[in-house]
Length: 165
Image (cartoon, rainbow, N blue to C red):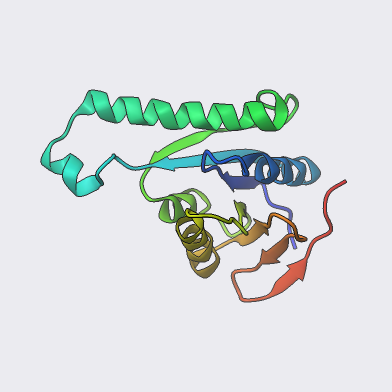
């Protein structure tokens, strides 16, 4: 199997981002790949409400807030963006699952997402992970809180991966 040239990683702004980012960065370094962290955002109140009452300055503020969450996640995971690793951050407007798949659109991409969340937001994030696993055209690596990551290949196969040292 050819090595991926891009490792796309979903960032949510949660405290679990550090583990997911670290695993994605390790995979990117191992593969000699570009790391593409993606954070998605939607207008408060949803797209229909925004279309009814558009406010470009407010949309720009939401976009910047998402970028700030992305930068903060890298700060917490690495103390900033890692040196020596090509990183191309993406802030995209849209629902997280479809946004991730819009970016991870090449068969040789590796998409890294978090899994195994607990608490009141679990249904939201589990839905994103399930969406990616069901629809991705590339391999998906889920990073559970307390288990070995599992890759899910677009053709239905699975393989256990050893944790990066």
